[in-house]
Image 1 (cartoon, one colour):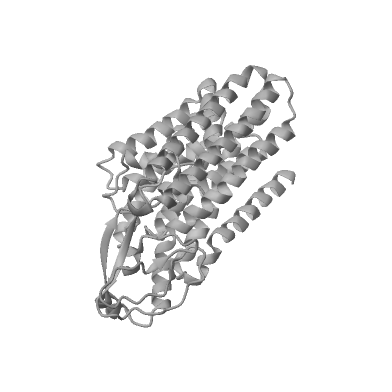
Image 2 (cartoon, rainbow, N blue to C red; image 1 turned 30 degrees about the horizontal axis):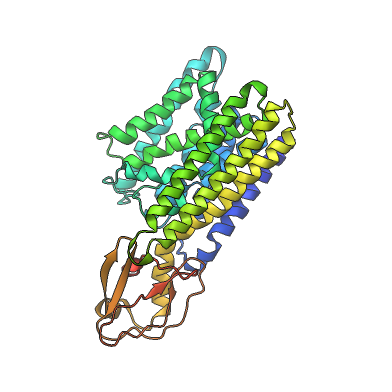
Length: 422
């Protein structure tokens, strides 16, 4: 009964957090769009339940679900860039691994091997089945590039700059280091094999007809579980484990330095258009420093042979919770701005789509922004938008084809306004 109560608490928190993230966009949702928050909750709770196989504590399991269901990659798949079914496929992956993780034991244990391969077969089958009905969740041409891996460092800053968003938030990187160390020491070859198979298919799959990035769900799921295990390792580590905690803290500090270097580079963008990215990289560095401080405190507790598991849990879980709360909000605001832009523009301007396309043309100024030019002086004083992340329509009057910004965000920084033409 106690275990069921914890499961219910986790599910309720996931739903509340999901409602907080997507509530500003509910007014813009069509019926199919409601799959987006459902996918996040289903994926998070599936990972939470799956992690019971390896993670003993509630805190580790809970944040494993958060990192998967509300992590940058899942939010990226569930966002407006792809069909809602793409997020559904990612959401069911933890549930597909259930038979292999909790399968037969003893003399029937060998059955777990084909059951562990089952998720790969099901994903390929679902992708092909969707194609039979004319649904193509993800373009097969999309490939993960080396540049996309930079989003691991600062997902919020890179969300609009990469083709595929990868990452686990900042403080969680420290827990991932501990989880990987525990995986190597415990020699869980089955988990290593599943992770490696997902990476191989992500890089080399040219025969299944499946969009390669869907295979990234498997390594991301493995890392989410390892993060949960790493959190428990940080909470319960002893004196002999202190070197791993110190290594985790050093890695987080190194990531903070790299993030600051990226932020410095963004300050040199023409006309200050990179200032928004500078701010995001600085915020990423601040979260890395917070994570390093949290793990550093645990290191000194372990060095002093002081357990105080409740204090360790409060420190590391609070740091990750704040990181996820801030990071997920920004990622959602970025990946959902397509929907908000389209709805806001149609609602905020007093002319239809055909008139809009006649009235304005896009002129690319820099990678960070596009400005609009009004050909016919149709766009005029149209008021403001109240959406938290959607672009607000500002007062403009072009006259003699002067170039002015048409859209600005709630915090007065310019968005990529080419999205309004969708």
